[in-house]
Structure formats: C-alpha cells, structure tokens
Length: 401
Ligand code: 3BY
Ligand code: FES
Ligand code: FE
Image (cartoon, rainbow, N blue to C red):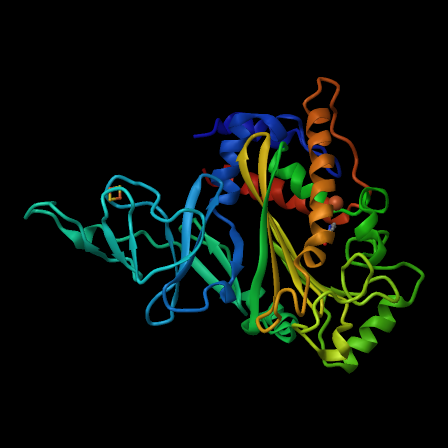
C-alpha cells in the first residue's frame, strides 16, 4: 500500500502547466499508488474482438502486476478474467494468443469452463465445493470491436465513449479485420514519461524523420493547422464521403479523424498505402487517420489500409512495456497484399526513437538538478491534458481514500 501522505504532498506540489515533481516519476510509493489508483481503476484498451475469432479463442496479457485473460466462450460471448488459478494462484495461460475449449492450469491441472466455473479438480476430497472456486471475472467492454477492460469494482462510465466514438470507428470495419503483427518493447522509463512523450509531437519533426513525412507534426493538439485551411478542406471531403470527423471527447478519452500531410494516403514511409486490400475503401482509402486515445495508456491510429495501436503498461518505477498491435483486413494475405516489414516499419522505427527519448528523459529527471518545467500549450497540449488528467484522478482517489 502506497504512502498516501507522501503522494498527496507530491500532487499538491505540482505547479500548473508544468511537468510533475520528481518523486512522481521515480519513487516506488508513487509507482504502487499509480498501479492502484490509475491502472487498477481505469478502462484499458487491451485489443480487438477480431483477435478472438472463434469460440475458445483467447489472449492473455499482463496489466501492471495483473495477469488477465480475455476469451470467447463456447456460446460466442466475450469474457475477461483474472488469469490466476483458484487453487494456489498460478497464472493459467501464458501471455499471448491461444485457443482451447477449457482452461487447464498447468500446475495441478484444475480445469475451468470458458464461463469461469471450475469443471475438474482431482483429489480434493468430499468437503470441497467447486462452485466456490470459479475464475474471477473482470469488467469488459466491447466498443465497436475495440476491447477495454477495467480491473476496478466500479469502472468509469463507458457509454459516452461508446455512443460518440462508434460512428467514427464503424467505417473501419473492425469486424472484418485481423491481427497482422504485435510487438513488445521494454523502456527504462516511468510510464508517465512514456505517455507524455506519446501525447506530444513537439519532438517529432527532429525525432521521427519517417513519421514526419505523413504526420502533421506541427499541428496543435487537436490537429489544428493554424492559418492553413487544410483542415476545412479535409473535413468537407470526409463529410461528402459520409465520414464523421469529430472531435469528440470525454474525461478519459478523445477521438477525431485528421488529415495527413498533403498528398499522403497512409502513415507509411512513402505516404502510399501499404496493404492492397484496405480496411476502409471509401475515398480510395484516402481518409486521413482516425486517432483515438484512452487515458492513461494508449493511442490508436486507423488509416484506410491498416490500424496501429500503442499501449504503455508499467513494470516498475523506471520501467514500462510498450505493446503495439497492427490490424489489416482479414482477407489481406501476407506476402501478396502486404509486406510485414513494410507494414510495421514506420511505427517500429518511431517506437524505438521514442524509447531512446524516454530513457534520456528519465535519466535527466532522476538528476538532483531536475525542476519541473513548462509545457508548450500549443505544441504539447495533449501531454498537458494527460498530466492534468493524472493529477485530477490521483487527487480524487486520495480524497476518497
Ligand atoms: O498520439 C499520437 O497520435 C501521436 C503518435 C505520434 C506522436 N503522438 C503525438
Ligand atoms: Fe492451478 Fe494448482 S495452482 S491447479
Ligand atoms: Fe514520439
């Protein structure tokens, strides 16, 4: 349990418009607090319904310290559980994708139905009650094929997100998508530094030469291009195609469709589509990118031809794992309709560049010379929004505790 008085003092010391006090980036108590107050209570985007194509499909992942499993049961219902055996607690499924009609714990072979009931446990004696040893469910929301879980008992409202976001997402046909690739990147930095970096493009023009070709790196947080009327022209073109652009937002989420740099159709190293069979064929697939973000941990971009998801999951005060997923149309054939290296090149390069920036940031933040500094309200608006959300959410938790 985190030292709440210490956390409160750090939160109270935060100067508006500035980065956080040092302890919030490297103190073990702050890390424990973040897991409990932030990751343990927020909706987290873990993946997509298309990753669970058949009854029995599952994927397992670890959110902070919590292994979870998401599956499709025999009746086709999606469910999520703590990935922890009700015998002596072993993790049941290793992280990754799999398929089975029952879940068998590798340790002593306790066996669970996909609906969570304990179906078999050998040599437990007459007094043993299997019905008291079902898998523990966790909250799961399926928003148009995007899967969110919440580990807390009392999840934030998800209906506003569902209502406002689903019309923007629908044209991307997630029901007809498949997972083409996923990756895991270990970063020696606090999760909040990973996310602040992910929420701003102040560093992009110089830090991400590949991304900067297509991504409007000098737009402000809501992809406003200043004097240029590119946004209006783009919005008019999307409206003519019947595509809503937003922006729409709630406390913990945001979504909008934005224009790529003039002349570019997809977020690739040459601006051309990288998948011959698009997810959304409207406008020849030239539909900018639908970007959505979920506080505390993710952003996703959906172009006409592919989708990319970024999720930051904390490991320790100074370590974070970045999970990335790429979706394409389910009928796109690797080696025929797309080349995997070409599909993944841009975001893999960007992630590696960001890792170096985050690790450099963490080393400097650990210095006795570190003092919180001001964000650019123009270039770092979304990083500031993230940090403000963090401070507000953390303070509200402290008040209730
Ligand atoms: O959140 C985003 O959309 C992006 C991706 C690249 C940098 N970051 C601001
Ligand atoms: Fe799972 Fe023993 S811990 S069967
Ligand atoms: Fe970056």
